[in-house]
Length: 206
Image (cartoon, rainbow, N blue to C red; front, side):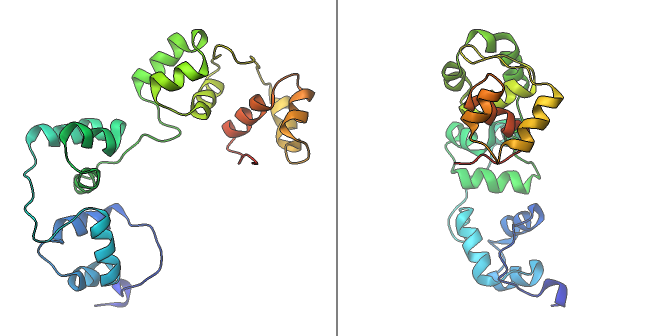
Protein backbone atom coordinates (compact mmCIF):
# COMPACT_ATOMS: atom_id res chain seq x y z
CA UNK A 1 0.00 0.00 0.00
CA UNK A 2 1.48 3.37 -0.99
CA UNK A 3 1.34 6.58 1.04
CA UNK A 4 -1.44 7.94 -1.14
CA UNK A 5 -3.84 5.24 0.05
CA UNK A 6 -2.63 5.04 3.63
CA UNK A 7 -5.73 4.54 5.85
CA UNK A 8 -6.84 7.64 7.69
CA UNK A 9 -9.42 8.44 10.34
CA UNK A 10 -9.77 12.02 9.11
CA UNK A 11 -13.44 13.02 8.88
CA UNK A 12 -13.75 13.78 5.19
CA UNK A 13 -16.80 13.45 2.96
CA UNK A 14 -16.98 10.19 1.01
CA UNK A 15 -16.58 10.72 -2.71
CA UNK A 16 -18.96 9.08 -5.23
CA UNK A 17 -16.03 6.95 -6.40
CA UNK A 18 -15.41 5.66 -2.86
CA UNK A 19 -19.08 4.83 -2.36
CA UNK A 20 -19.23 2.98 -5.67
CA UNK A 21 -16.12 0.97 -4.78
CA UNK A 22 -17.56 0.07 -1.38
CA UNK A 23 -20.99 -1.00 -2.71
CA UNK A 24 -19.40 -2.97 -5.54
CA UNK A 25 -16.81 -4.87 -3.51
CA UNK A 26 -18.17 -5.05 0.05
CA UNK A 27 -19.56 -8.59 -0.33
CA UNK A 28 -16.43 -10.04 -1.87
CA UNK A 29 -13.64 -8.16 -0.10
CA UNK A 30 -12.75 -7.66 3.56
CA UNK A 31 -12.85 -4.25 5.18
CA UNK A 32 -9.05 -4.36 5.38
CA UNK A 33 -8.74 -5.02 1.65
CA UNK A 34 -11.13 -2.18 0.79
CA UNK A 35 -9.22 0.04 3.21
CA UNK A 36 -6.01 -0.55 1.27
CA UNK A 37 -7.69 0.54 -1.96
CA UNK A 38 -9.48 3.72 -0.86
CA UNK A 39 -7.32 4.84 2.07
CA UNK A 40 -9.86 4.68 4.91
CA UNK A 41 -9.61 2.59 8.07
CA UNK A 42 -11.40 -0.78 8.26
CA UNK A 43 -13.57 0.59 11.08
CA UNK A 44 -14.63 3.50 8.88
CA UNK A 45 -15.39 1.05 6.06
CA UNK A 46 -17.66 -1.03 8.31
CA UNK A 47 -19.45 2.04 9.67
CA UNK A 48 -20.15 3.38 6.17
CA UNK A 49 -21.31 -0.01 4.95
CA UNK A 50 -23.77 -0.20 7.82
CA UNK A 51 -25.11 3.28 7.02
CA UNK A 52 -25.63 2.22 3.41
CA UNK A 53 -27.43 -0.94 4.49
CA UNK A 54 -24.79 -3.24 2.99
CA UNK A 55 -24.64 -6.83 4.22
CA UNK A 56 -22.12 -9.51 3.39
CA UNK A 57 -24.24 -12.63 3.81
CA UNK A 58 -27.83 -11.49 3.46
CA UNK A 59 -29.50 -12.34 0.13
CA UNK A 60 -29.95 -9.36 -2.14
CA UNK A 61 -33.18 -8.91 -4.02
CA UNK A 62 -32.35 -8.58 -7.72
CA UNK A 63 -33.00 -5.16 -9.20
CA UNK A 64 -35.70 -5.13 -11.84
CA UNK A 65 -35.38 -3.27 -15.12
CA UNK A 66 -38.25 -1.03 -14.00
CA UNK A 67 -36.46 -0.11 -10.75
CA UNK A 68 -33.20 0.63 -12.53
CA UNK A 69 -35.01 2.78 -15.09
CA UNK A 70 -36.78 4.66 -12.29
CA UNK A 71 -33.47 5.43 -10.59
CA UNK A 72 -31.91 6.49 -13.88
CA UNK A 73 -34.76 8.82 -14.89
CA UNK A 74 -36.33 9.95 -11.61
CA UNK A 75 -33.60 9.85 -8.93
CA UNK A 76 -32.15 13.28 -9.83
CA UNK A 77 -35.56 14.87 -9.20
CA UNK A 78 -37.27 12.56 -6.68
CA UNK A 79 -34.32 11.44 -4.59
CA UNK A 80 -34.12 8.22 -2.53
CA UNK A 81 -37.10 8.68 -0.19
CA UNK A 82 -39.83 8.70 -2.82
CA UNK A 83 -38.30 5.89 -4.87
CA UNK A 84 -37.87 3.77 -1.73
CA UNK A 85 -41.56 4.23 -0.95
CA UNK A 86 -42.61 3.20 -4.46
CA UNK A 87 -40.29 0.20 -4.77
CA UNK A 88 -40.50 -1.03 -1.19
CA UNK A 89 -36.73 -1.00 -0.86
CA UNK A 90 -34.70 0.66 1.88
CA UNK A 91 -33.66 4.26 1.34
CA UNK A 92 -30.03 3.28 1.91
CA UNK A 93 -30.30 0.65 -0.83
CA UNK A 94 -31.59 3.25 -3.27
CA UNK A 95 -28.75 5.62 -2.38
CA UNK A 96 -26.16 2.86 -2.83
CA UNK A 97 -27.60 1.77 -6.18
CA UNK A 98 -27.71 5.36 -7.44
CA UNK A 99 -24.05 5.82 -6.41
CA UNK A 100 -23.15 2.63 -8.26
CA UNK A 101 -24.94 4.01 -11.36
CA UNK A 102 -23.20 7.39 -10.93
CA UNK A 103 -26.48 9.26 -10.63
CA UNK A 104 -26.77 12.29 -8.36
CA UNK A 105 -29.78 13.64 -6.46
CA UNK A 106 -30.25 17.19 -7.76
CA UNK A 107 -33.17 18.25 -5.54
CA UNK A 108 -31.76 20.93 -3.27
CA UNK A 109 -32.28 24.58 -2.48
CA UNK A 110 -31.50 25.76 -6.03
CA UNK A 111 -33.08 22.93 -8.04
CA UNK A 112 -36.71 23.15 -9.11
CA UNK A 113 -38.26 20.65 -11.48
CA UNK A 114 -39.94 21.85 -14.71
CA UNK A 115 -43.37 21.00 -13.26
CA UNK A 116 -42.68 23.03 -10.09
CA UNK A 117 -41.47 26.01 -12.12
CA UNK A 118 -44.55 25.89 -14.35
CA UNK A 119 -46.85 25.68 -11.32
CA UNK A 120 -45.20 28.64 -9.57
CA UNK A 121 -45.46 30.81 -12.68
CA UNK A 122 -49.14 29.98 -13.15
CA UNK A 123 -50.45 29.91 -9.59
CA UNK A 124 -48.11 31.68 -7.13
CA UNK A 125 -50.02 34.98 -7.28
CA UNK A 126 -53.31 33.24 -6.54
CA UNK A 127 -52.21 30.99 -3.67
CA UNK A 128 -50.89 31.72 -0.19
CA UNK A 129 -47.49 30.57 1.03
CA UNK A 130 -49.18 27.93 3.20
CA UNK A 131 -51.10 26.54 0.22
CA UNK A 132 -47.94 26.41 -1.90
CA UNK A 133 -46.07 24.61 0.87
CA UNK A 134 -48.81 21.96 1.08
CA UNK A 135 -48.99 21.49 -2.69
CA UNK A 136 -45.29 21.47 -3.53
CA UNK A 137 -43.97 19.91 -0.32
CA UNK A 138 -41.28 22.58 0.08
CA UNK A 139 -40.58 24.86 3.03
CA UNK A 140 -42.04 28.33 3.24
CA UNK A 141 -38.55 29.82 2.99
CA UNK A 142 -37.84 27.86 -0.21
CA UNK A 143 -41.13 29.06 -1.72
CA UNK A 144 -40.47 32.70 -0.90
CA UNK A 145 -36.83 32.57 -1.99
CA UNK A 146 -37.80 31.13 -5.37
CA UNK A 147 -40.55 33.71 -5.79
CA UNK A 148 -38.13 36.53 -4.99
CA UNK A 149 -35.40 35.31 -7.33
CA UNK A 150 -37.85 34.98 -10.19
CA UNK A 151 -39.93 38.12 -9.66
CA UNK A 152 -43.07 36.28 -8.58
CA UNK A 153 -45.60 37.50 -6.03
CA UNK A 154 -47.20 35.09 -3.56
CA UNK A 155 -50.74 35.81 -2.44
CA UNK A 156 -50.98 37.36 1.03
CA UNK A 157 -47.41 38.62 1.14
CA UNK A 158 -46.27 42.21 0.84
CA UNK A 159 -45.07 42.81 -2.69
CA UNK A 160 -41.66 44.46 -2.84
CA UNK A 161 -39.52 44.99 -5.92
CA UNK A 162 -35.97 45.63 -4.77
CA UNK A 163 -33.62 47.78 -6.79
CA UNK A 164 -29.83 47.45 -6.70
CA UNK A 165 -29.36 50.39 -4.34
CA UNK A 166 -31.88 49.01 -1.82
CA UNK A 167 -30.26 45.57 -1.92
CA UNK A 168 -26.85 47.15 -1.29
CA UNK A 169 -28.21 49.13 1.68
CA UNK A 170 -29.81 46.05 3.22
CA UNK A 171 -26.58 44.06 2.85
CA UNK A 172 -24.61 46.89 4.44
CA UNK A 173 -26.94 47.34 7.41
CA UNK A 174 -28.47 43.97 8.24
CA UNK A 175 -25.87 43.32 10.97
CA UNK A 176 -26.40 46.74 12.53
CA UNK A 177 -30.21 46.75 12.79
CA UNK A 178 -32.95 44.27 13.62
CA UNK A 179 -34.89 42.85 10.68
CA UNK A 180 -37.99 44.69 11.86
CA UNK A 181 -36.12 48.02 12.01
CA UNK A 182 -34.59 47.40 8.61
CA UNK A 183 -37.97 46.52 7.16
CA UNK A 184 -39.41 49.79 8.44
CA UNK A 185 -36.71 51.67 6.53
CA UNK A 186 -38.01 50.21 3.27
CA UNK A 187 -41.74 50.10 4.11
CA UNK A 188 -41.78 46.31 4.21
CA UNK A 189 -41.78 43.45 6.73
CA UNK A 190 -39.03 41.68 8.65
CA UNK A 191 -39.98 38.52 6.71
CA UNK A 192 -39.35 40.34 3.42
CA UNK A 193 -35.91 41.39 4.66
CA UNK A 194 -35.09 37.80 5.58
CA UNK A 195 -36.28 36.58 2.17
CA UNK A 196 -34.04 39.12 0.44
CA UNK A 197 -31.03 38.14 2.55
CA UNK A 198 -31.55 34.41 1.94
CA UNK A 199 -31.75 35.06 -1.79
CA UNK A 200 -28.39 36.84 -1.48
CA UNK A 201 -26.95 33.77 0.31
CA UNK A 202 -26.69 35.58 3.66
CA UNK A 203 -27.06 33.54 6.86
CA UNK A 204 -30.10 34.62 8.88
CA UNK A 205 -29.69 35.47 12.56
CA UNK A 206 -31.89 33.62 15.03
